[in-house]
Image 1 (cartoon, helix red, strand yellow):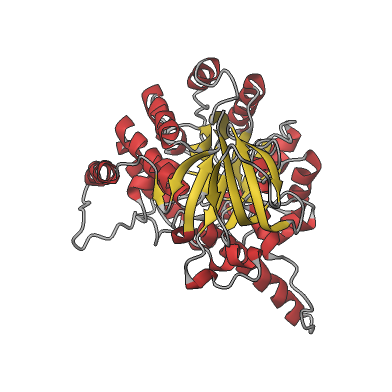
Image 2 (spheres, helix red, strand yellow; image 1 turned 90 degrees about the vertical axis):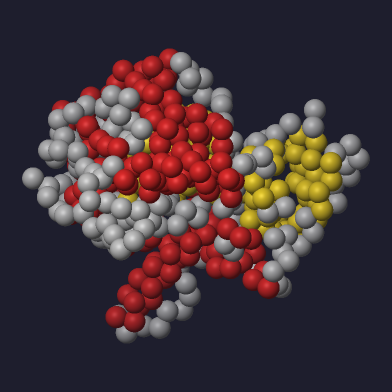
Length: 461
């Protein structure tokens, strides 16, 4: 039995609203939180002095295509259609299993380094079962809590849309009967389905029924720019496929009545405001979701376009929605009396709401007795956090990955004193560069460095 006492911190629990213990202690035993309070009397635990530092739940990302980490920022100047062509009809086909492994390992460790302790890996470049196993191996090696959302490969995404190619059911069944027969590991399983935006309703129905057969949660894209104006939620509703175990990603361009169907079904939502505004998905649906009682979760989406931390995503979420609310007030000839969306609200999107959307709200997402000790400790030895007056504001508006001093997953330090534990950085760098050189170098006319600027031609025929 191991005990760890985090003593004297500014404990932001995200359990009950406004709950901050300042100062406060967190006692951990065998990976679980067993006590939270002030001046806990413990004599048989390792004591870590966190005086003056923010102690908070690990952040939760509910939708990331982690395999794309080795082509980081290649799509930073691409539109959504350019991304679909450049990644799914271009670079993705050159990924070997070792490239999938490298992308997932680097991406998962990047997330941990930035305080993300739980990640839904939307893995949709699985050409073969060997690719699948390589992706899972990397998540397990990284040591974070993850939902491996099993998707298809380029054979599902490339070519004719809507696609008549079904989800790789045999591979999904293999995993559910084998590596993911139980739901008790750090890495568990879900299904990443394309839905009626990207495949036929016949295939969509088969895919969603597979999820029911295997008793797995579903994550599905809806409302992605012009691709999302096909009334996908009505199509799912007509087929009897709406369920509380589904997370709907983006939701930008789906209509109000469709959002209400999601709310009435008990479904959850994942928004990615940085990518959505950069690529042209449409305005983030934050306010529209909240108006119907859906508290969204947050996602990075693709590091092929943007950075991989949730602090930036929280700030974007808050800035865009506040600008929208304030603009509406000004247009109505009114002066905004107060903000509608608070820093605490957005932090909850990135923690407990993310955990719930991943089906893990009973286990993580908040600091509560009985939950896993998935914890982030922020540094207090920088001017960016001196003095701390509003912990929620500090986290959302002032924090960044460089302030993430310590990270625990299941009570185990995976980052301590500002450095990832047991990570061979030269090996990671070599893996990343070798995969990048292979993948990009395989594309006709591409070159690493020099003056080459990738801009895929839009040929969707």
